[in-house]
Length: 134
Length: 139
Image 1 (cartoon, rainbow over the protein chains, first blue to last red):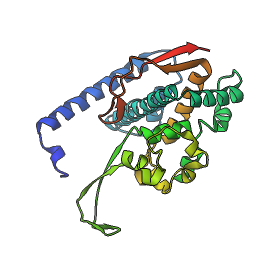
Image 2: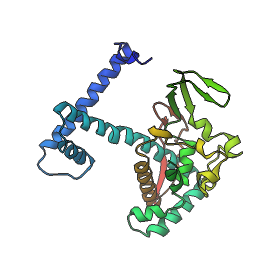
Image 3: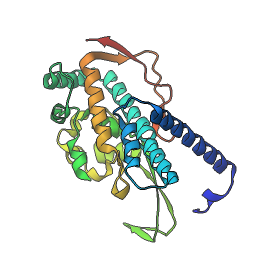
Image 4: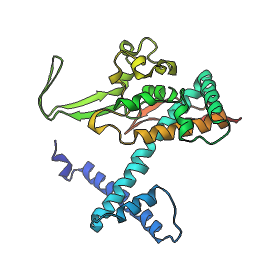
């Protein structure tokens, strides 16, 4: 089972091709960012700066950037986005819970943009328990 | 509670594959080394023996006293997986979700569009096959 991934089967070739494509797409974005004169303060910038601070070979350096981008922008994006979609669908079909959750948010935030403290106070939208489990 | 309940009914990763690295025994089931195991998270999350008769209903109230108060076996609730390979981004994800839902709730009232077709589909993750169409009303 473990060696199958090294054989040039159709599926593997497809996977390798896609991996190469993702790699070049990410490196292109990184190249564009490095050529920019203005400095942006976002996750991509932090990943790039993080890679500069280590003594990696060029290849390992690219790998570091690519893997982090894959994690944050691909793996970390769709999984969370899809939960948000389902959550909105459920709240849309359960008006009473939508009203209860909204009342809580309005009470805690009273018109301000939520910050970490406000979010920690939200009981209906909250989740502290599962976090402490692991 | 609302997000917990969403994660219970629609875990983004409803199946977890594992590989037995050595001979194991679960209760009276022998699992020989090399066996591939599929953990059906969605079945755990919706089993009436564990969650009660309303297992398939959206009822965030069940999480009022945490996961332990919500069901008979809290360890079967694992929307982020468990063990050494537990989701690395779970805290970030929960923060993003709470922020997003709170902002949408405080700005809009919403209901399902008649165009919405309910069709959860499993690819790499469990997603709405035709998207989620909502009717928004600015508050």
